[in-house]
Length: 205
Image (cartoon, rainbow, N blue to C red; front, side):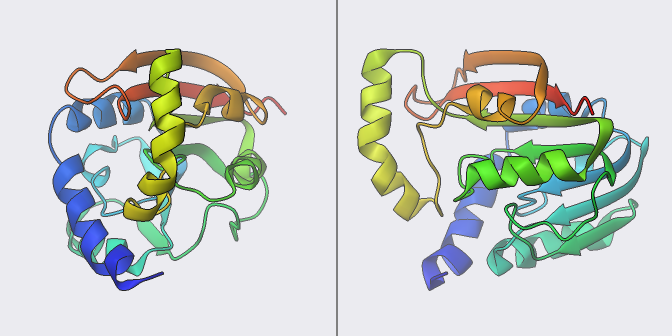
């Protein structure tokens, strides 16, 4: 991980993702979360202010030390019981059937081995546990998709591995059962990066 990804990109990301409409989306994704919760791709900690009181324990992971440095003051100020670990989503250290909920906000786009990460999410969820997520990804419009494919190699370099063209719902459904899903263009974003997938998926057994 180079200097840009450790020092520059975390600050850019924190600035871009802190305002609307992202605050509204974060509140929606976290509204029903409760019990023991894992957040993958914690980043700079922007979700922390929106977790409900029903969360009894929160574990957060992120492999980027630059993100963790910005998140630390938010963690210190939180009333939640939070355990923070430097882990990749593809290699979780937690035992099977540990969490009631797993949370991911704009993280599935940048995990290198997305299938392995989703397999790990499935593993650490309790039976009946839920995965709540919001992500940008592959557009249904052929013209937009073409440009997403073309630009993704550059996007990965400047945005710490971010893919513009992942079919998020299809990927999630390979490991969990989708309970709800909304897909839409974020009104304030370019279509190439603003086609969103917001949903909840369940581990049935």
